[in-house]
Length: 226
Length: 226
DNA sequence: TGGTTCCGATACTCGATAGTACCGTATATA
DNA sequence: TATATACGGTACTATCGAGTATCGGAACCA
Image 1 (spheres, rainbow over the protein chains, first blue to last red):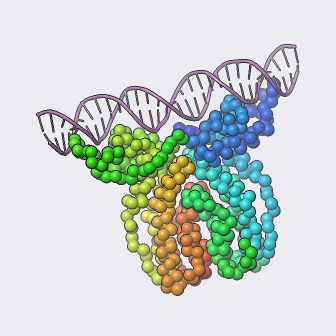
Image 2: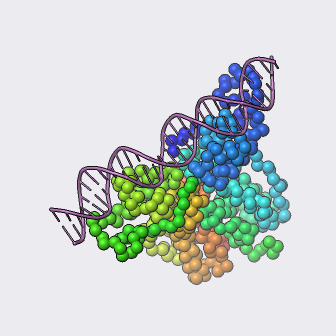
Image 3: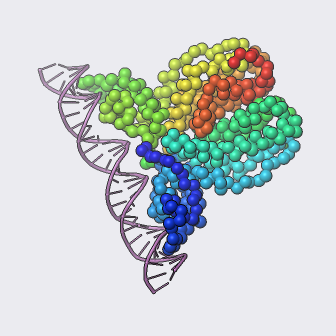
């Protein structure tokens, strides 16, 4: 409630935060920053399971097999820990497989539907749900979450569509930006509110029943293979 | 966290809840049930402003100008109060204006875009956001929220599309159920995560850039009037 | 080796809030 | 009028969790 969030520190690395850059003679044991990612991952897990308000620092510490004080040595508050965790989620995303290039927009989009990415997406949406209550207090968090969770998928869709435009498969008049957001938005709503499964069948029906028609490719214009 | 939610009572009206139906001789002052809606509305307001976890019973009582004990006489817990508030939101929805019938699907959909409904929708989405953290603990709440907030809009879209099918304007092969969810889902995502304005312009662009193309009506096939 | 800082762990403070108890008052039945 | 209950308000209890303090031990540096 009375929480204030001014600035995430976002990985300042070796020296501590409020030191005036040079006044630290670096004595004694060094902070083990290899543990940061483990702690942030633990925070994301707890966040997905219990939501921001349900999440306690003790849970995160226990999950990361770390002491509570260790967390407070690295992040000044629960809020900043979460903000950092969400921000780092984006960085730590492996670029993943290269974009498919099957020659048709439908082929590319269907090729993007992989069990791994479905499950990955569901986990990230749980994190997003857990963040919702905090977003009204820290709106910049919405940007971070969007950048880490949904924007990458939308960017892929945009690129696939632009290539389709370039090869003349679809019209250049398409509202690429909006259409690229269709499946992320609908998958988010279906997962979080309808709580219905987002499986391959649903995603294919989105491609064939909404996206392809929207770009002017009639549903029955493409290959039969799922 | 340790909250349990078994059953919402959902407006049992005159007699109290746990009375075995007839053993109440009805003595003394009667409960003033005309205040129930005021209390539930206050709960929805606070819910939209602060979210479930940030909401306190004292806030709701103060907003409704009622005593905290009064709330606990009527609902056994904060959770059940909220569940009841969301459930009653659906009931208390005035049917609103009759469906537009302009003769074209585009005309009908554009006619549905009214300042009042935009603002109403935004308020309801704030409530939905406030509920998110609780939904994982009480999944039936997701159904109630969906039924009260998004489903009515989707139902309208379905009906407009079915009429368009009946009059031969669009093909009967359209995936009506899925397409009817496009604008609710995208509006929800845009409001809650992107925090961008959902204004008339955006809604029109959804109709012209996504929905009409998806049902096979080329974007430039319709009336010029916005 | 000795001083310094980090580590995990635990105990503590302190504010906030769900839920209860009780007050004086208002309103209903008998 | 007497009784019983609801009312708005307030004080209280009990719990929970953020953040702090401190511990013995380990790692690092001079």
